[in-house]
Image (cartoon, rainbow, N blue to C red):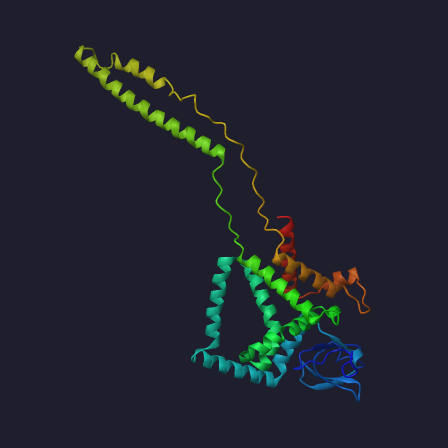
Length: 352
């Protein structure tokens, strides 16, 4: 690293969030800050504290890069406490309202929410989560350049996209800092996009299976038996009419001949031809309904690995299983829910 930036925190515009550690002031330890620059004269980084908005100067050994979850917490603190950011939000709200023709942005957000629900219903929850994650990933990559240059200078944003991919990977996985080039980072992002696109646009429906052969055979037998019964009943009615006519013309009492002969015909079971071939092939075994290991499972596996890594690493760079179990129990409930869904998604690919 350069002496003007020994830890590689300086970005233009400022985008590196750090966590304060091991200072003599206990109230500062654990706070988050945004790096503004580096003072070579004092060998300290200049940063603005996200919680108070005050500036501070600290040595490199008292700062460490934020993880993804810590970066979200730092950005939330900065938005909540920085008056300039609040003013910027009000300006963006007014600009959005102007673009919407005077309509309130929250109404537009409601329409977008309904649209997202409809898309979720059409493509499924798993694919919707995958699409949302991919959109958020691309948004995090290009958001700094869009904020700096504006969407009108899209060529410059595209040209700087590989560099932003590398910075995003380094912020997500601090151990990759200095080991990933722009081309490698771009390749990883492109592979993820192609993998996600293949999964999103792949048809999840399966063709309707034909009825099992045994069911078809039983249906044929029932249809044939019904047809024979219908013909037999018609013949009995015709025969009853003839026998009744013969009794009347012979001056016999009612039912003298007809009842006896009709009882014989009714008790005789209908005959079914013996030349029908019922030799159907055996029914195939049911297919497993598991979706296989796809992009969603890959992202879930990455989420599990990153969470376990961050929760189990000690300050000296070693992995401690006991520390992992303690930190997993202390995770916030939303993060536990995401972790549980990721575990279920991975198990579903291999077991269900």
